[in-house]
Image (cartoon, rainbow, N blue to C red; front, side, top):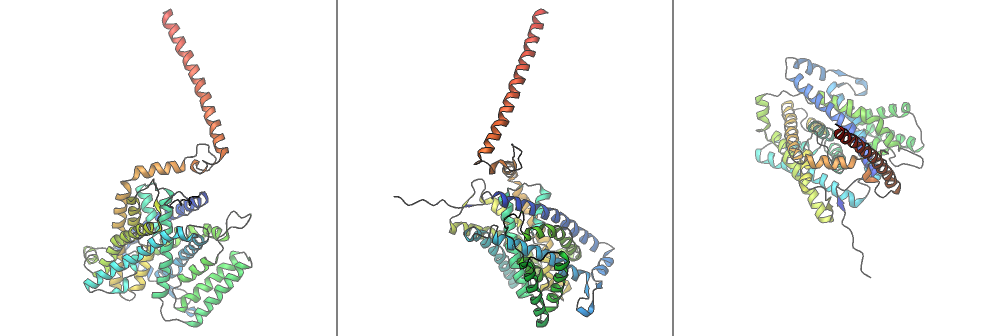
Length: 468
């Protein structure tokens, strides 16, 4: 008896219906948030480059908070350490869901996006290292060009009007989730100041209590929100970046559904918190972080200072080559075949889109060059310039295939029987084909009736012509 022939796995194949629904809902919120993020960045740049710049500096450097608790922080600091904790809380839930119910639960399926994300972070870091080594600059900013901003990338897609197939969007989302995981690890490992072990122990105890309450099934925001604030405050005072508290709590939520549940607790909370993260927290962070003075001299320094140039090259070249190269190598060695409806240039376009690094890149830039205002502003400008170049290149590449994407998107969305489920997911359902048969039979009957009516009108016209 001949051995069974294994069918090669398809890379960027059609998503399952539940996964497609989840991805669509998540990306819809992120797209709206991305547009707000773009708007906030533009406002910050205009505000910082007009005669009102003094008010901008005064507001973002204004301090508030209880000094006795070590929380007398500037508005900019509150946005970076406080509001971004909400963003990383959502990132923690996303990661947990991907690990237990999404693309990352299957090790073979996860290998490709994980390898692509790792290469998409390693190559930009290497490009940065090479640039600053040749130019005699500081290596402290190696992590700045490693992050992808999914909201900003989706905002670009919304602006250029490209209806990417769901598989490409899911690949971009999974890349961003893995990217966030490694960015979190980078922040925790490389940007932790001197540790306050008492505060860190308190934060750990708080996280244990948080987990026990979840396990016991305790409900009520009035329990978890105050506890989360205490954990955040202790984490901040411990010397570990406070956003790590958000990630840790997100990872603790259950993201698998039990019998009778329409949503897991993690999915439910993510659904509630994601609009707050995408619509408020991240745009406010951008408003108080993206405001750098952009002049001819500042733009010139982007391409002459090795640190800034390393960031631009890392985002534009490093990200595209890293993500695409990692994807191609992973597909080659896992023997995964590319979906027949797509081509490798599509993967390269998405890889170029991954070069849009904004939120986390700005945060890491502030951490890497803390105390050096001039270099921090140069690096921030480099993040903006590099992200803009990557966005323009991706837009050009995606527009070249826009007709193909629109055709695939329309095929995915087609629902002729109007039951709320796209037809491509019902080809093995007999009830679907019976419904379609009824629809076509009704249409056939209508056309037969129209044909008969048209024939009678023709006969009457002919009779009238003879009588005349």
